[in-house]
Image (tube, rainbow, N blue to C red):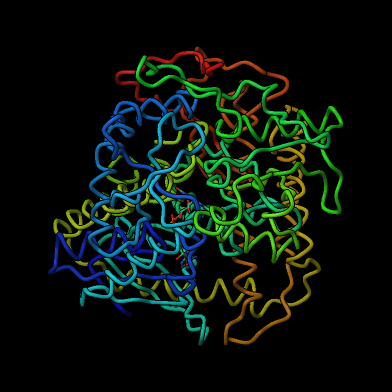
Amino acid sequence: MPAHDIVIVGGGGAGLRAAIAIAEAAPSLDVALVSKVYPMRSHTVAAEGGAAAVIRDNDSLDHHAVDTISGGDWLADQAAVEVFVQEAPAEMIRLEHWGCPWSREPDGRVAVRPFGGMKLERTWFAADKTGFHLLHTLFQTSLKYGNITPYDESFVTRLLVADGRCQGVATIELQTGHVDVIAGRAVILCTGGAGRVFPFTTNGAIKTGDGMAMAYRVGVPLKDMEFVQYHPTGLPGTGILITEASRGEGGILVNRDGYRYLQDYDLGTPLDVSDERHPVKKSMELGPRDRLSQAFVKEQQKGRTIPGPYGDVVHLDIRHLGQARIDKKLPFVRELATKYVNIDPVYEPIPVRPVLHYFMGGIDTDVEGATVLPGLYAAGECACVNINGANRLGSNSLTELLVFGARAGKAAAAFAREHPPPDLAQLDKQGVEEQHRLARRFIQKTGGHERIAGLRQEMRDAMESGAGIYRTEAGLQAACDALAALRERFADLQLDDRSLTFNTELTAALELDFMLDVAEAIAHSALARRESRGSHQREDHPERDDDAYLKHTLAFCNGAMPRIDYQEVSITRWPPAERVYGR
Ligand SMILES: Cc1cc2nc3c(=O)[nH]c(=O)nc-3n(C[C@H](O)[C@H](O)[C@H](O)COP(=O)(O)OP(=O)(O)OC[C@H]3O[C@@H](n4cnc5c(N)ncnc54)[C@H](O)[C@@H]3O)c2cc1C
């Protein structure tokens, strides 16, 4: 059984940043970096638009904080947001020193572009392939350190807890099917989001909420799971993202009449810190994502969207930017539109629709990434610190995984130094039990009647119809009931593939098992929140209700259905106000 000081699950942006932080801060500690795919295949690679951090003289940390807090409809923890905006610029410059090729202005300064809900231009970018360059920079930097041991293509199936603290993980080595334990004094979950719980998403196929479900199962609550973000511009059919940068660069959205319909909706930039020097313009296409996605549904209800083979769409028009600018600033947008919908955006508008994009909620952590389970930390999209509140602003997530990935790494290193090595005898016993569970429930099981694909599709349909952009009590209750029935049917699952080598049917079954837990937490949290805030819009409770719901939802794993509890929101300097938008 391999034993290390710290086990990191996830080789995406958050996992790599945490690993580097440990390697730098505590060179004597050794780190296991476990990932179900090669690190460069993690979803961070797909990020296009950019990462937000204050860099220009006309900007300020308070401006970034206020945009983030009001964009999140006052549900963000303000103490966490203050940490975030303060540490963000240094993280971005550090990335530059590690070799990240940030795009530049002609005078040599780092270029910044506007992004939705950000009042000033503060989104750093590397053309429209920011995630690729960011992940590559972190990956190549991690290779410098001899104390980071990669476990690529190792699928973690559960967290191992002994003597009241997390001491390791059980894994399947995908090439051999060998079930083993990787032990550590501390574990950091950096397993990303869970977009695949929904049918139509920008998220890669590996984003199945594994870490969220594993933490939930050992008693750590999932926080604010009802807040899931739809991105307003995905390609029909595949859900592939057309980055917000296309609107940041000047792209417009039009309906079936060629009308720029967003002018009819309240989408501007938050007013709080506007002053004479920074006049607030009406935002339109650069409004926050929740409002833009909701405006699409309203247009659809008015019959003003465009029917297509994969449902209704609107048009994203960037033709007026001209070929030279598109090729320089948005080359990937042109490539994706040409390849996936056979449309060259230099000459034709791109069909787009809202698609599930991001989870504001996740594993409940403090600003050091610590969970309530000693020895267990989490960072990146799987965690909920919470800086994103009820709606994340685009380009805050990449920065979040740098800031809080580094913090979780340092905190886990401090914990590891203070605690004894893992109890290998106890872990070995748990590893054997896990091996038997996997064999009994999946590999050797016979006589089951259910199939992965059918259950998975029914789960996704239940989530879209009950817990989508607009929600009601009846719809959410129906989703909860459907999920409970699917959970029972899952016990009757039958696999065909009994091989040990790259058994993708087994991993798909385990991922579905995780997704059912995540879906359950989303639907029950949403059912309990009887108000509308940010991305959580209840048609039966259309107003925000600060008296009853200015608090975080906590979903605890509790047998048949989750137990829902609440936690205070940290308010430091910005008392809740109406989420007013510029005219
Ligand atoms: C198309 C797209 C574009 C985006 N664009 C932007 C943008 O421009 N700006 C921005 O700020 N944000 C953007 N986002 C959001 C942002 O990219 C993500 O939130 C962020 O990259 C998540 O990083 P992460 O490190 O938390 O997880 P990921 O990068 O998703 O990595 C998760 C890791 O966990 C591992 N893992 C998961 N489960 C297991 C398991 N069971 N066993 C072992 N390993 C496991 C995976 O192998 C992987 O290495 C975008 C997201 C998408 C989908």
